[in-house]
Length: 228
Image (cartoon, rainbow, N blue to C red; front, side):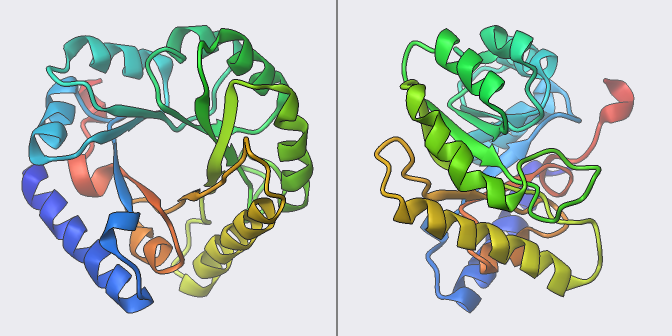
């Protein structure tokens, strides 16, 4: 596993996707999802030039923080239990999974400054996925006004696992449309400029459809889950 070479390939693919859609590569952040790899592999990603790392478990996040030589920009990308907010809040810059007011209340309570939160949206309406239904997003964001430590930096979704590219595109386009609706509200606490969408299997499509954050694990750092 050569993480640096993987990163070069991914960057080239993102560049091609940006060119096809008339975008700048500077608009896309690569988040190395390190939940299935060791701190050593995560460090290889940082050494290769990745500055954004994503974890979906409190334990994995804290373990890597204690072992890494460098301090990346941390993204919490998994379902976040309210009781665990206090353990991760001082370590992460972004939370990608805000989907209920009870969680917002706890984040606001524990944070000492504004936390960049992305609203998790179940754009595909799959029963197996977490997140708000699309029609509930704007109302939910308006309700967040009461929590001054929360900044709604954007929206996040996961597309269905399918080989039908049109289904994937429709999911991503729905999120982009929702972002425009939120931006039209002109809420100072909800600039909503980020679109966190696209993983190892569909990030090229996501970039073509406007993603500003791609969450890439297997294609970038591999999978060492058998040694976890």
